[in-house]
Structures are given as structure tokens and as C-alpha cells.
Length: 80
Picture 1 (spheres, rainbow, N blue to C red):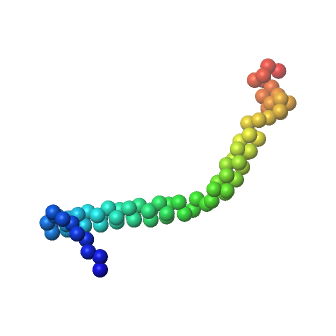
Picture 2: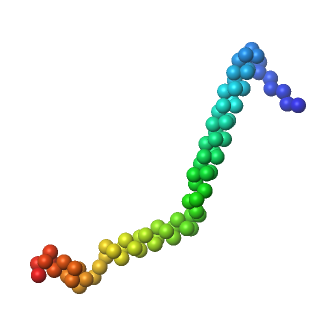
Picture 3: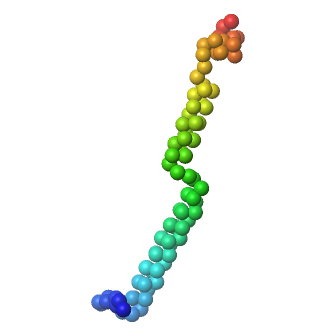
């Protein structure tokens, strides 16, 4: 049996300290569970990397175009 020795504290103070410590540990455990539950569906780093590359390629294909395609889309805006 492990016995905690707290010199200079009354039993009332010891009880308050134990309650405070228990509350802090409970909050830390609750936060750990919350983070675990919230990040469970995020996937792995590799999947995130693939998604980002896919989005970057899509946006690049939508923004970058050839000059002829640009002329075909907006001839009045360019001056024709």
C-alpha cells in the first residue's frame, strides 16, 4: 500500500487538494477523449496529402489555360 505523506497540511486541506487533483485529472481525461473522438474521421497524413494534391491539380486546370482558349471564352474583353 502506497501512503502519501503531506507534511504540514491538515486533513481538510489534504482532502481539498485531492479533490482538486481529481477534478484536474478528470478534465484532462475528458479533453483527451474529446480530441480522439473529433479527429477519428480525419484519416491519415497520406490521404490528406492526396486530397490536397488533387484539389491543387483541379484548381490549376481551372485557372491555367491556353491563350487560344482564353480568346475563345472572352473575345470582347480582350479587344476583338
